Amino acid sequence: MDVLSIVYNSARDGRLRRLKAFLDHRPKDEVGQIVGAKTHGATPLVMACRNGHYDVAEYLIEKCGADVEQPGSVVFDGETIEGAPPLWCAAAAGHLSVVKLLVRRGAKVNSTTKTNSTPLRAACFDGYFEIVKFLVQHGADIEVANRHAHTCLMIASYRGHIKIAKFLLSLKADANRKSVKGNTALHDCAESGSLEILKVLVEHGARMDVDSYGMTPLLAAAITGHTHIVEHLVGMPHLVSRKERIDALELLGATYVDKKRDMIGALEFWKRAMEERYRGDGPVIQKPAPPSGVAAYDFAKEISDPEALDELLADPDEMRMQALVIRERILGPAHPDTSYYIRYRGAVYADAGKFNRCIELWNYALDMQQSMLEPLNPMTQGSLFSFTELFSFMIGDEGKQTSRGRRVPPVQREDLIRVFKKAVLEVKLGKQMLDKIPTCERDLTYLNRVLVITLHLACLLTRETPKVESEDHTELHRAIYELVKINAKGKQGRDALQLTHSKDAALVGGYPACEFPSQHLTQALLKVGADVTARDSDGNTALHLAALSQPWRTDLATTLLEAGAHLDAVNNEGKTFEMLLNDKTRFNSVNPLKYTSLTCLAARVVWRTQPIDRVPKHLRNFVQMH
Image (cartoon, rainbow, N blue to C red; front, side, top):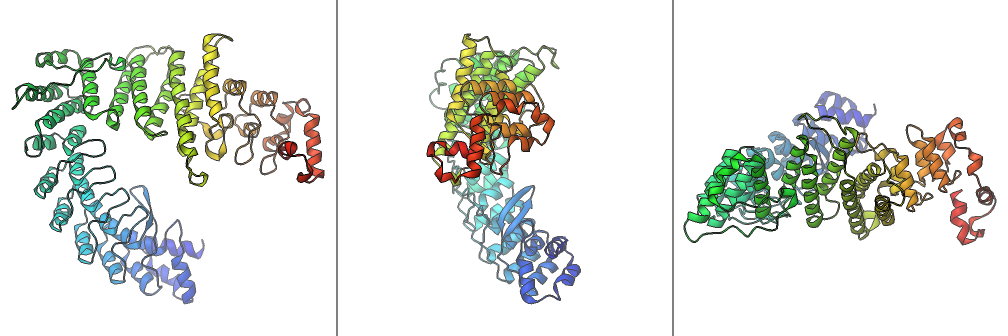
């Protein structure tokens, strides 16, 4: 183990004697370099402060000259915090003595991490009141917010730290500041369920504002099922209007159905809301005219007759649909909870063997997400991935009995093709979005994932190719052509054909109805014009990647060669298919003589004997490939 690692580990573990043994006899300049160097992204001082080793921190600062402002990377609750100064680390971990040491030695109390989190905010997160008070006494700014515009008061409210919240409010902390998403501290404590803090915030002038989804703190409490918060707020007519009370009670009832699975409780809230509508103070507040029935909801219409509510208990399925209809009306399609609970209800149906109901609900949620969210949104990715898992399971277990005694039905081709087209659309929109961003700033992670999901859906579609010249055959290849035409490229610059042969494209390991690489999918991609000579950022063609696939597939290599892949094409490392295969027997199994042309042989000679600038421009790419 080298000196840097020994010093780092000693500081991390608080072994001062060992640390001194390695540093005391060294020149000052060398010691400065050692304690300023990072191991695993952090300096020795950062680790000593993170773990609360006062004596080690003091030694590193006073005897070794460690920089009290030099940041590093530390892990808290499994999350890596980048650019964390030593003071932030000590405050976040609750080490008051180390915090005092650092401040005495000149540490800036308002220094921030890469996400703009201050030591004060870090102390507020886990409720270290004494550290909060000390930092404020030494100049900490209580209004510095992180990159999401989330303030110290907001995090204390969300985490339920009443003592800190009261302290910050006594210092005139702004109770109505909004984060990037428009939420306030009142939203945060309503969502987390802290009634005591909510009362204090209201006493200090907190308003019932709306966030970017149009949600008030009252609705936030109803969504999360915090009945005590809802009951408190609906009893405050100066804060909550009659219409808001009705919406909150109806939404809370929907939460009781889907989250708490309490049908009787849900019915009571819906009855109270109905009573408020028709018999409350003031004129009757009618429910909005119901929109045209939604097939995914089994054409359920929202009940507006008080007498009809009692009948719901005899039909639990209808009650569940009522919850979905109510939630969509109040929250709107843009709110993530709307599509989340639609997907949740679909999953419950799938578990019960009602796959058709699941597919309808999931398609409705996916349509909602694609119309309301930005391309490649993780929620849309999740919906597409769930479809891939569901279809893979159904194909793999077709005819078998589920735990509820139902048989798994066959996947309908029209269901598969419908979802596949939506996945292709997501790829198209995602590529268009990324094309507007400079190449050096693009993150291809999400596009790569959606592209792989889309290819797995295509793999399931091509397991049984429809009869040639049939309508299904034409529709299938037209849909796959649309994917190839987009020419989207994921990580390492790999297009659809290359990803199909990439060992990194495995997605649905639990349900191996489609295993990559797939001969059927390869043939389908080639048939609609996938470029077999295209190269990724490492210079690999699909044939190069096929050589690396496990297990080795002669049929795949043959298919690519028949489509025009070059056996002797070299990647950026100068390696051919044969070199990557590293097995003469396997190489000969594809009959190299059959796939070596005179033009390829000539290109090799030209490459070895002629400067590239003497080669005609229209031939250079071909020569360089060899």
